[in-house]
Amino acid sequence: MAGSPDSLVLMQPTSPNQFSAATSGTIPTLETVTDSLSVVALPLPPGNVPCTLSYLLADDRGGIHVIDPGPDWGENWGILVSALAARGKSVTDVASIVVTHLHPDHIGLAGRLREPSGAPVIMHGSDAAALETPGDPVRMRVSELSNWGVPADRRPELTALTLGPATVAEFLVDRTVEGGELLDVPGRSLRVIHTPGHTSGHICLREEEQKLIFTGDHVLPTVNPGIGLGGPTSENPIRDYLASLDTVAAFDDHEVLPGHGYRFTGLTERCTTLANHHRRRTDEVAAVLEGQPDATIWQIAEQLTWSSGWQGLRDFSLLSALSQTELHRELVHS
Picture 1 (cartoon, rainbow, N blue to C red):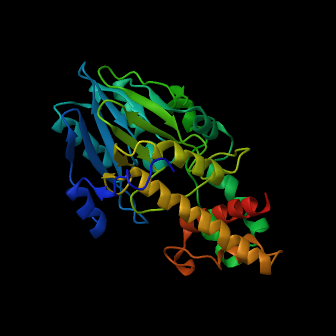
Picture 2: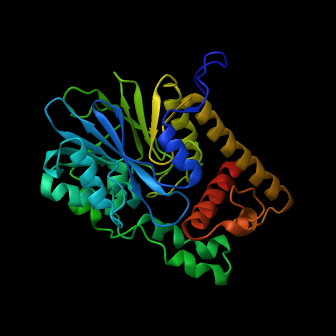
């Protein structure tokens, strides 16, 4: 990781409001980060995290650029409209909708924002292509259940999973971007950083002048993000993820604005912790295979250390665990 131990910023929350909510499992209130930036929490259905953090960035011409518009669920549309109103704006003032990756808890409201505003929906080309692929990415992983050795009584909860209509990209994604591009946000320096791993087209966004970095699900303050949860890729997503962590770890003097949890500083330290987690997981898988070289993915996974415990994994969390176990096995064999 970039930086020496003496130069690292220790990881610290920068929003008492968000930190308190995250530790109590509640929803943080709307707050202002800078004069040009607000963050609104949009609740999620019951699960691992309570909400998605959506960011409203004002430009110098009166436009609002929404980063990760959040899930189309419950009262979220009204919450987002109210957050815009708190800045003296409406949905017609939205100038662009930037999505860090294809998952519905980040892209869900993009279509509803796009219709009245005419604002383009922007995402990385790899994730846009994954949305256009027949069958959604979750279904593509579910097809592996037999090969993974998943017991028959656990398959129904996984076969029911989906990310949504495969045709969503046809009317949502207006423009694709690549790493290094500077987005059209007048008066702001917002640059795309391609950070594959969570999905192959995941991006982070760096506001260069204000030293802010929007990390989506790439770097979260307390959760180890799932890996390989997008479209197919020729590279091992864990290897991609580790390289992407190195990329963003260079910005240790930036405030981190994640897709879930709370804002914080200490990016390099957090990246190191996340990388070490995956290296330990690879070592765990190697240890299982040493004694059971023919073990199925299910048999390997049930012997690994999971933060919520193996028995606590259900639905999407279980699918993610099995998918990542397969990826770690590939690393062991590579």
